[in-house]
Length: 285
Ligand code: SAM
Image 1 (spheres, rainbow, N blue to C red):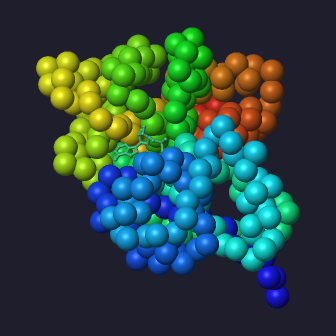
Image 2: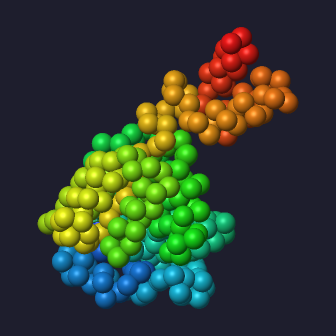
């Protein structure tokens, strides 16, 4: 039996404090230490639930420096709960370096799951939730951001991003420019808080709405972008994106139809059979 302590990865609310789980409260009270992204920020939550456990900071700038300290606490049999400012640690938040290192070294790491803005946003968006791609924060610099958006344009899944309020309008405009003004986007704003609003619409309509109502540009946002393949299902979609079609035709010029269909299927997610049938149809026309 291991005498080492356990590292718990504990989710905290993304707004409404009552979204904390009973197990999270128990864990935060019972562990020897809490490692918090921002100790001052977490004081509000900890005070609210009368949690008196000592706290130290673990943020992106000291994560690796804290590693030995955390390891020695765990080696002494002490248990630690990692929390971030909101939601689930490691999800666009610190903790990956710590967890990956400790996992490799055989330490016990347990989850105390709960809220995460991406899942909360997706679940109320009205966009396909069967397959999704979480991007997190896009690059800040315009050139890299636009390049990344171009890569995301044809992802065969609903795409979820986080965005800061001072960049939200720029992001929507870039989505319009690069993916088209009628691409449907859901803005899930201030989830679980007083001014929660969720709007789903073509991106140009969203921009117009938010330009009229400036209040809608404030707060925290999850941006959820509809897939170019609208039903979000792998295969089974009768509409094939023009880029996919073009690639298929080009490859079919110098590859056997089966091979071309296989390659394009791997790339696009459209079923191999659908692409193969299409090539045969084109050949017979
Ligand atoms: N770890 C968190 C999670 O599990 O969702 C995310 C942390 S990340 C640093 C913060 C970003 O998450 C915000 O900028 C915003 O994009 C999103 N977010 C967090 N809380 C939110 C809320 N209540 N409503 C909408 N978006 C939220």
